[in-house]
Length: 258
Image 1 (cartoon, one colour):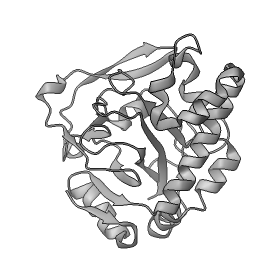
Image 2: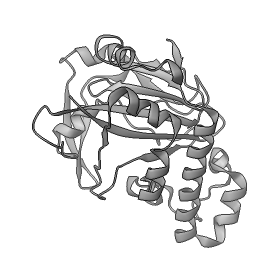
Image 3: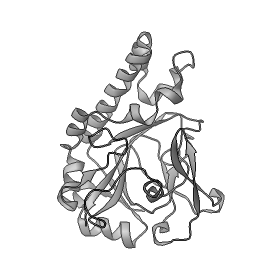
């Protein structure tokens, strides 16, 4: 699998690999972009802790996100409830900063002025991050993003067919081969995948009816600063974190004019 440099990105190459190729396009952002994304996530991470456990802020600030798992204690706060998706969606000012970064501007120059979905209904683009501890089940199960939309997550703008969806997933802190994202190459071309919806925490979520061990899951070779743009129907899911640092990633759904 080839990981492209950001200056190689073009509409033809991206959509060719996403639609007709393996279903995804791998690239690297600049180290400056990576540093700014990490700073935005860290600011929000510490702000949330400030709200729920102010006496613990200094401890988590000193450890940093990569070593979150080394200092976290259940007596500090409940990990699962504190780091729900709503608390991990960047605020509108941070979203504006992301939109000025080089990788985002390059995507815009290739795809046009795309929209970013607002699946939480916050009234601003939904750019959010994830935190996955080593040896924990913080990862998302294998699925296709299209299934969430079919089950009522989010609304597409404009007339039917006016926009299509692409997902971007970015590694801010990961260890290639030990933590990150897994995909089933070429799975976007098939309609055979079976799933059903289950109500989880008040929302219908898709559950794959296939056995994961029967899928040809491949770990994407992404180090910090690497990102993948993939098809709405591509089967994918988080890797179990086999590394020794917490995995931090960021993602959002691009709504591209057809």
